[in-house]
Length: 216
Image (tube, rainbow, N blue to C red; front, side, top):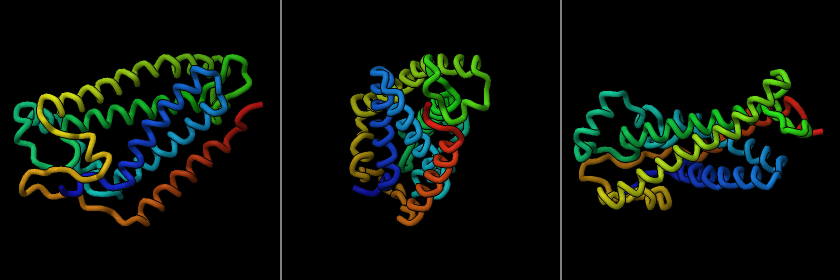
């Protein structure tokens, strides 16, 4: 068993899962203030992941797993020929799509106002009231797109486990997994790097949230 995922990446992954579920619950229950705070937490995670994609462990860095169309097609033609720790080229597409969709969802929430006009996103002042209400509706509808992408992600994990015999969930929990002979394991980044990335992400989120009051 060799290192595959560093601790910050794993904490990001599972915290994001929990916060998306919590955001759904708060929206369904009408707990809008909690919903907004959950959105701010997700924004912080996204900003952290963006920074971690440049400064984190080797398998978390975008340059090491985001591939072009040729690499994706080559992987589809010969899945067994891919020899690297971390995301496959196809898995990278799923990750990028999910992160992009979550970013869109959070962005829509930042400029939305609720039906009663009592709670609004901190950036809602940047658009007109009519547009803010339209974006709120889009924020609600776009969640179905996010759910579809999450469903595809889960289905892919199950496919790899049941059909290809590869365990993807366990390494994301314990950080270690079985690698092919000769495959370089994950090279971690220093813990202080993760702390700095988190502090920067928190600072940017705080700056955005300070743009307007949470409610009236």
